[in-house]
Image (tube, rainbow, N blue to C red; front, side, top):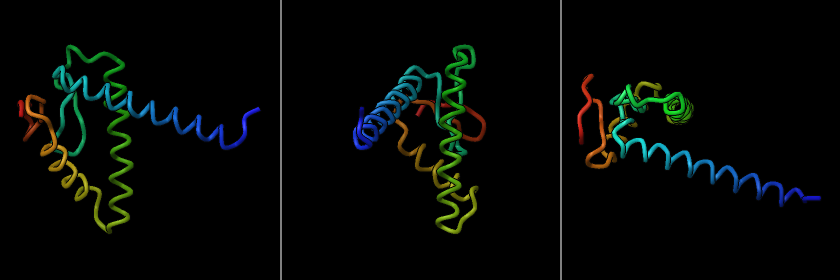
Length: 111
């Protein structure tokens, strides 16, 4: 029988591995030009024709997580979610690798 500590360690390890796979998948999709950063602070699908149901689900999941984080940051810093989204959008686009896609004013472009 597992102790509580062993259970928590197993759970934590599983969550970390899931997060790493999640990040790797997003990174791979960006490398492939399928997903890119939006000027709204979220990710979007660049190549709709290549967007499988799994890709759509991943993008939705990433955006849901970001939305939660933005809401927490807005509350913590006494700002609106729109203000946090704008800050995050600038940061995310600045951090986007060269060759990945960003969407500025409605148009996808390679950075």
